[in-house]
Image (cartoon, rainbow, N blue to C red):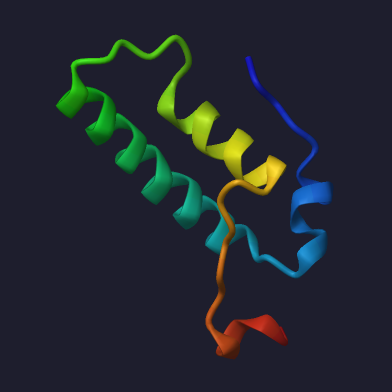
Length: 69
């Protein structure tokens, strides 16, 4: 099970809500692309999406209203 330390991910002033929303959105994109191309994923789409966010391949952009909270 992939269980990263979220403190490192949240250091960039990303709220947990924004992180969860971004991971879910990216996971749906990954799953849809895999299904469209007939690929079988070795890992779960959520794990792949979270790994992409942690490594910086996919960035989370927050609205200005919640950046300063």
